[in-house]
Image 1: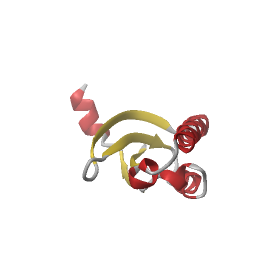
Image 2 (image 1 turned 60 degrees about the vertical axis):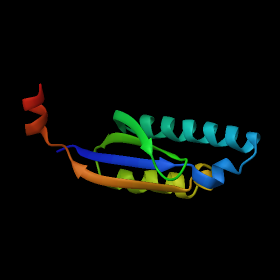
Image 3 (image 1 turned 180 degrees about the vertical axis):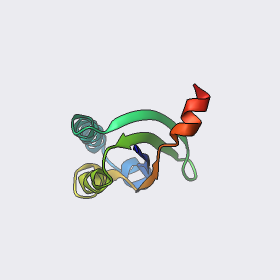
Length: 106
């Protein structure tokens, strides 16, 4: 059964206080992180965004992984890397695909 992950993050105050150079480095780091996830088999199902806090915006990604241990690797990639320095908050919510509902939707 496919494991679905809702990844939610927002840059928040650390990003707003960063220099333009630091922001550019953060964008490059997150792009590299997403490329790494993709090359390791993480599938992107969809994205959306919405309010996170006062004057803020959160990014949401619905992902699919083969094994829950992959989520731990993803967490470590953020927490221990360049991206984590400018992200105020991030969360991973883990569940399983509801293929019976998806089949009805088709």
